[in-house]
Amino acid sequence: MYYSSNYSQYSGYSEEIYDGYEKTSRYLSMQDGTKLAIDIYRPTKDGVLHEERLPVIWTATQYRRAYVKEDGSYSNLDESSPLWYFPNISKILRHGYVIAALDVRGSGASYGYHGLQNTMKECYDLYEVNEWLAAQPWCSGVTGMFGLSALGKAQIMCAMMAPPSLKCIMPNVFAMENPAMMTNGIVNIGWMSHADEGVWKNSVVDPAPPVDEDPDGIMRAEAIEMHKLNPRSETERREAHYFDDYLPFWDTKVYMEAYYPNYIYNINNSQIACYILGGWKDFYAHDVFFWYKTLKTPKKISVGPWNHTDSCTSQEPFNFVTEHLRWYDYWLKGIDNGIMSEPPVLLYNNGEEAWKEYSDFPLPEQKVVPYYLQGRISHSIDSVVDGSMGTRPPMDAVGDSDYPVDYSITRTGYENRFFYTVKGSTDFTEFDRKSMTFTTPPMSRDMNFIGFPVVNLWISADAPDIDVYFYLQEVDEEGKSANITEQKIRASFRGLTRPPFDNMGLPYHRLMHRDQKELKVGEITKLEVALFPMSNTIKQGHSLRLTINCADRGHWDTPVLKPAPTLTVYHNTEYPSHISLPVIPS
Image (cartoon, rainbow, N blue to C red; front, side, top):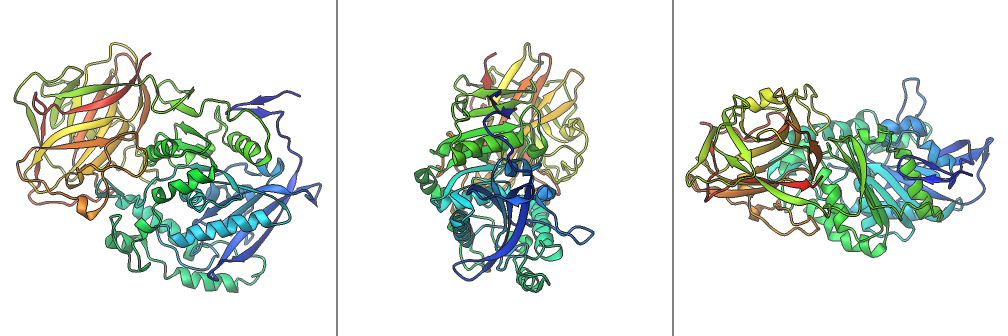
């Protein structure tokens, strides 16, 4: 027997002993009487149902546990991958696992109500469902979970309750904090509308199939009538942006009630093993690293060249199904396949196009190097402000640049880490021309950057508030500009507080009303912002560019002021604006 076990291949430790499955569905009644719909897939061999007790891996979704096909039949296991984002999941079942999928309350065919934000009732539901699955005569008594985005958050919510039978989870591209609709004080209207359309469609317009005990769909119809009362995300967005906002529908400050970091002790104390998956192009790229640093359970993290959903379809050399199977075999079946003897951090370098293993994150060899903004013209682009950038601090006592705010700027048509937006050319040159830019000379050698860039920017404005957007880009020999990472902040949220999780000492801006502080017109103040993490090699002859503007029309909700204000950025000996970059020595 040939034994092999790593992130690209797995053989010898586990065999496919089944060749099919039997699907059943039913309602589970929660403690408060709410009925939740669940599908259960049990493996078969030559049409015969398994007799031994097997581990269960399961997921909980607000996007339908299954769907009705055009011919009226219902989707099954691998056909549900558009929902679960787990291609070829039946391979894991054939290795001897029961698989289950739950419609969370207020969605699919389940009864109850559901909004954009999670509630503690969902957490209690997940605990009950997990322990019900573990107690079934066909279950070995241990469970694991899987799923991305909202399905990843569901794993954290279940782990928050520390169910004794839950031994491992594998959350993919998921948040550390809600409301995810708001970043450093700016509301993401694009994400809100996408999420709202998806949840409404899958709960009211095109919901999950009825369960076996409801062949005529009468109970599902009752559930849909409840779903029609679900609060729409547009309503929740108007009512609540901040952690301390009250949502009338739920009669509580729901963000604070189900705030994940409040329950980190429960997860750590439970010792539920956690394998974190993330994508460099995803809008939770920072959160997955915060979870990795915060959790004190057995853990691993892999971050690939993915946006929000394509991690599941990126099979080579990182094998999505293989990694799940290795994780479940180790924690649910006790197979010592070596997965916990490997370095815990696996990262894809977008410049080298290669996977590498590391002992920790931030990388121990990381050296933080400041790149200072300069008023000297770079002659690399005819932007509104064409400045330069380099490692030598400013030498002039006076130096600043004015940028008249342009509210027409939008990333529609450009690549965007928010996967639902229009994707177009990767060349950001036209975008940059409408902005203020600071560009380095061409690199004299290849430079590796792995970690979190942090902007320290001294500004003033002729308005009591202003939104500032940052984009770090790579510019090739022909002047083509490609976006690497970005972030944004509303100046009134510039105050720093200490987060209730390990964010590696990065600037943290808490989203509470009391944390806001307006600008004084003309007064110089400092913005400190951590951009999304990066893993890039900038080739010799290429340059780095920091692009700054004040709007992203159609995606982020920046108020349009009339007349448009002017942003002043300072770059001198007293106010040395810069971006600190995580350099990894070659």
